[in-house]
Image 1 (cartoon, rainbow, N blue to C red):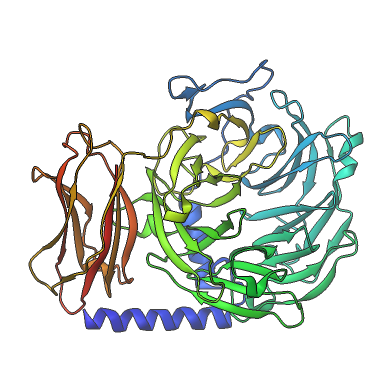
Image 2: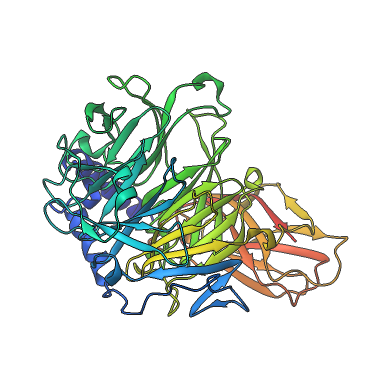
Amino acid sequence: MRFRRISGLMLLMAGVLAVSTAPAGAHDPETPEGQAAARAFMADYEPADRRAPITGTVAGVPCVNGKADIYPCKNVDLVSVLPLSSIGGGNGNDIWGWTDPTTQKEYAIVGRTNGTAFVDISTATSPKYLGNLPSNGGSSTWRDMKVYKDHAFIVADQISGHGMQVFDLTRLRTVTSAQTFTADKLYTGFGPAHNIAINEETGYAYAIGSNTCSGGPHMVDIRTPKSPVNAGCVSQDGYTHDNQCVVYRGPDTRYTGREICFNSNEDTLTIVDVTTKSNPVQLSRTGYSGAQYSHQGWLTENQKYFLMDDELDEQRSATDKKTKTYIWDLTSLTAPRHTGTYSSPAESIDHNMYVKGDYVYQANYRAGLRILDIKNVASASLTEAGYFDIYPSADGAQFNGAWSTYPYFPSGNVVVNGIEQGLVVVKPNLGTSEPPPTGGKFENTNNVNIPDLGAAITSDITVTGQTGNAPATLQVAVDIKHSWRGDLVIDLVAPDGTAYRLKNSSGNDSADNVITTYTVNASTEVANGTWKLKVQDVARYDTGYIDAWSLQF
């Protein structure tokens, strides 16, 4: 075990060296990390779907008995589908939206490997393809776009001279037939970039994972959209995969009114004050239990919490392929806390998520669009309110299906871009979502030491006052501090002695701690009685203890 820990440290140091010497990090085709990422993605490659468009219906296709057309669903209706062959070809990637402030028409801005499609979805059951802005210099798996002042700003990775395309969206008002567009401006302060974020309140864009700024945010003043100006770099923590930058109004009053970026930096949440563009200040750099590849995240609207996805934790786990959402408490920007992890019922890789009101809209590859109720995020408790699976053939931790989503249209329609499927327009009906559990929460916060390579230990919770059996979605929140969590086997033991395996051992999982919530189908068990959390350390040298655990009925 000590040898494994030393080996892990050596790998960590190698990773740090790679970040410092390879500016574009995990997605730079010139680095081993970038080449490995491309190989992993292409290993799951499938050609674009050849299905016919689903359009022209009066009211779309409602979700009935768990299906809308061929798509599994819950509380989300199908409105229309435009396959990639109908919007310029290639394979799909990112997506964003624009609502014309003059006409109130809604448009989808659809990223593809070979360009960007513009689709009028103001009549959402009969979307209209308006044309394509070709990629600047080649094809790319990764294309990203955001909108500011009625202009789209578009970047692409692994194209050396792509830069940032600026496109005036008001040009779409007069389009009557599909055409090929040209950019209004090309910003060349960087070549490839993996992502772009925009703070619409300040008028600054952040190109992320470019060949500049050590892969960190390349800041651009876009307050005059067609005259972008380089504003500086955030390079202290190397490669940034994605971020969200806001004028801060959250609980840490030391930074009220400052412009703060929340960066998903491969293995950390890194928070930076970018108010002074010439002198960005890193406020914190925080790792978390389970980190494999910190991919992307979004703030709750009150800026008290940050929800993060990790793109590789499911695929790299030997046993647990359930999609996970990492919950951060931002009471202190200099010391954010990972307070819990939501585990989805579906097995899939998570990719992009965006918060709107009390819900987070997640594009989770093969599991499609998943919508989570975040009203109880303060207690690190999320519940699934609805879903629409655009990849109906199978779930699994592979790179197919839903790449991204955009939930901010005034109509309530949500667009999803599928790698193989193209543009999917859906309409959530979240008023019928299942309520959060109300059966009661039971908790044990007494510490119980876990002996190294020893006998299993247990921590008890006595449940009283419940009626009938436990639910099929019993929530088991676990907080175990341990210096090599792969040593641990964890079971939930029901009052009648039936054991439910929560976690198997995995010798290669060298991360610290198990802080997560498991969902257990305990519907055959009587709720009242003594439940036990059973934990055993099955390998030598690393130790820990049960800090706390709880049951939510």
